[in-house]
Image (cartoon, rainbow, N blue to C red; front, top):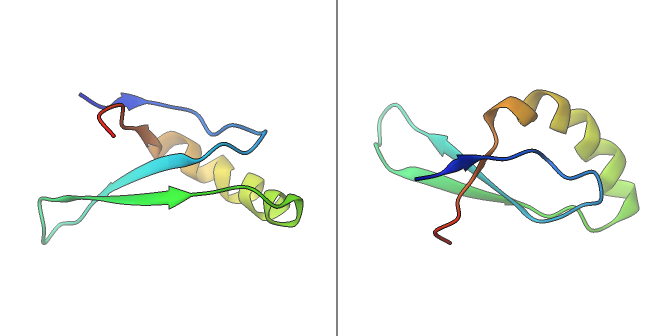
Length: 59
């Protein structure tokens, strides 16, 4: 099963799983925080995404 994970401030690749109402399939969104410029934007979005982040160990 998927375990809940927290966004890493250092910028590791994170697997974000979202469920659609129409489709029962789970969509994997890969958020790669590599550039420092993008890190500032990602930290702001990370604050509200943090709750919904699911780390999939199967991948």
